[in-house]
Image (tube, rainbow over all chains, first blue to last red):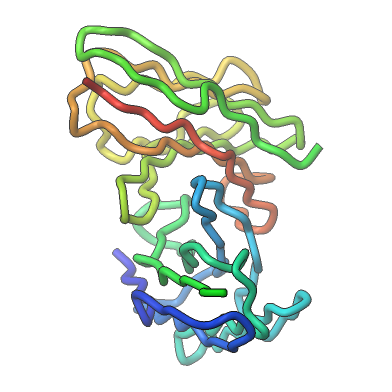
Length: 111
Length: 114
């Protein structure tokens, strides 16, 4: 099956800092999403981004499908940004139409 | 309504118990999913329902039994579970199977098997 690798696995930053999270995938994908899982387990859909660039407030994401990677940018971090950020892909092949997740980046924003 | 609602939020059950997890959405989505997430791991797909029919069963043990009574409801029936089945169980829905745009997760049921 497809491999989804995220880096870094852990990241600790001070409030106000900027960060870049990376997602590499091993095969062509139909689509790619970024999720934020808060400490209570809720998965929030941040971006649906199979290609190109999108921005939503302090967050933006870029996917370069031909080079099989995606980046999530967080600017001016706030403590509420803490949690785990997952990249998830959906791909044709193997009959899998659910999402395949990377292992996530655990982000801690300190006040 | 853009939510997926899961009940209960927490469940503790013995290995001989029978319990059910419930999931509901009113977004008109025709695909619904169950995922299992162990601590400090990513979610893993268990089942996919498309138009109320089971589409994918990712080799899940028979002690987990899904049911889709109608297009808005998804149940997961649990019987004779093991302590290693303790996990966060997440329900999700999307407009159709294979559609990632609009994919929405519920807040999960945290299950502990004792």
